[in-house]
Length: 519
Ligand SMILES: Cc1cc2nc3c(=O)[nH]c(=O)nc-3n(C[C@H](O)[C@H](O)[C@H](O)COP(=O)(O)O)c2cc1C
Image 1 (cartoon, rainbow, N blue to C red):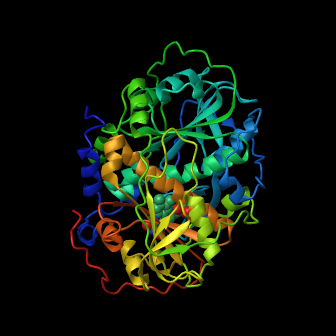
Image 2 (image 1 turned 90 degrees about the horizontal axis):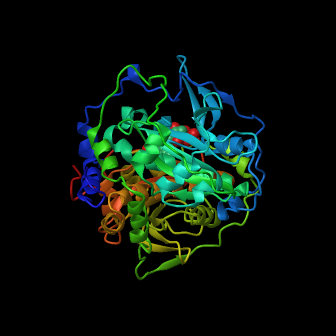
Image 3 (image 1 turned 60 degrees about the horizontal axis):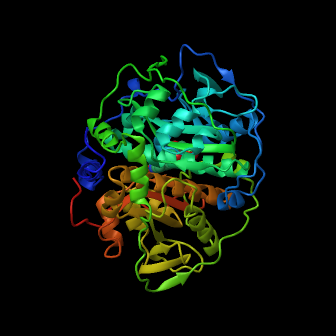
C-alpha cells in the first residue's frame, strides 16, 4: 500500500484532474442517463426506524449559530438527532421537471445535486434510541440499524481519541464515489470533500445551536472505520466523524467487529471505475491508532503565514445578527442560478467572509486555505482582485479594475462567476500542507474550503442574498491572482450576490490565456 507520506500521489491526482480550456474542450465524456446512480442508499434486509418528524425550527439567529458552537446540553434526545440529520442531510425541497424528472434537493448544497455523502450514526446515550450503529436514509427520513449494541469504543479506537467513547453520538460521513464520478469522473474525489464540507457546515452549526458541542475528526484508521460501517472502500469510504452531545460514562469495549455487510439496492445497472480516485484515497489512509496520533501531532501548528500586507482595505465588522433563524435559512436555501448586477453592501460581504473563516472545533488546525476575491459590485469596495486577511478582517488589494469577464472565465466560463457581486476563490499552498499532513492533507484542504464555502452560503441566505459553489480552471485561477498566489493551488470557488432574472456576462472570447497548461 502506498504510504500517506508519498505525497507525489496527491500532487499527481490534483494535476491530472485539473480543468483547463483544453481538457474541457477535448473531453469525450458524456452523461449516460441510463445508469444515473440512485440518490439514496437503501438497505434491503433492514426495517426502517422512522425518525420523529417534528423538527425543531431552530429560531436561533443564523449568524449567532455560525459564530460559536455551544456545548451546554445535558442530554441528547432522538428529536435532537432528527433535527441535526434533517438540517444537515435531509430532503428540504422537491422539484419536478418537464418530462417527469424529479429532484429531491437536500439541506446542504452538493455538486450536481448528486448527493454522494452518506450519513451513519453511532448512538450511545440518546434518549429514545437504543445504542447501536445506524444508517440514515433521507429518502424516507429513517434510520436502519446495521449493528446492535454500543460501538462507540471501537470508534474511539479508530479515531485514536477517548472522547467518542463518552460522547452521546458520533456521526460518520462517507461518500459513495460512483454517485459523483458518474458525472464528474476522477475529479469527483475533490467533490467528496467539498460536499461533505458543506454538509459539515450545517451539521456543526446545528449541533452548536442545540448545545451539543460538535467536534470534527479528520484523522482515523480508515480500514477499521470502513469495516465497522460495513462499507467496501472500493466503492464507498468514511471521510469524517463528528461527535455530539454530553459526555457520559465510557462505552464498554467492543469484543469483536465482524466483517458483516448488509445488502443494499444497486445504484445503477453498471458503473465505471476511476482508479485515480481510489488510488489517492488509499494513499491518504492511516493504518494504526499510533499513525493517527503521529499524524495529528505532525500537522499541529501548520498555519499558513499571510505574509506582509500592502494596501489593506478595512472591512466593517461582521453583523452580529441577521434577523433570520438558522432553521429558516437552511429551509429556504438554494443555490442561485442567476445573479443580477445589484451590489452587495460592504457589511454583507464582510459578514460572509467572517462566517466562512470561523474556526471549528476539530482534531487538526484550520487555516490551510486562503481566500482570494474578485469584487464586481460591493458598495464602498473598489472593483478588483483582493486577498482576504482573516486575522485583520481586511482585504488586501491586488489589482483594481473590472474583472467580470475574467471571473466568469475562471469559473469554467460560467456566467454565474461574472454576474456575482463578489466571488471567493479558495487557494491553498499544497506543498507545505502535504509535507505536514501527507496525502491526507489534500483531503483537509478540500474539506476546509468546502465547509468554509458552506458557511458563506449560510451567511448569504441569512442576510437575504444568494450564493453558488462553482468549479474552475485550475491554473488560470492561480495565474490570475499571481504573483501573490504563486505556488498555491486553486481548491474551490463560491460566488455571492443577489438573484436576478437576467445575467449579463457573456463569454464570447477568452479573456485570459493561461501561460502553462494543466494537463
Ligand atoms: C461544491 C459545489 C460546487 C458547485 N459547483 C457548481 C458549478 O460549477 N456550477 C453551478 O451552476 N452550480 C454549482 N453548484 C451548485 C449545485 O449545482 C447545487 O448545490 C445543487 O444543484 C443542489 O441545489 P441547491 O444548492 O439549490 O440545493 C455547486 C455546489 C457545490 C456545493
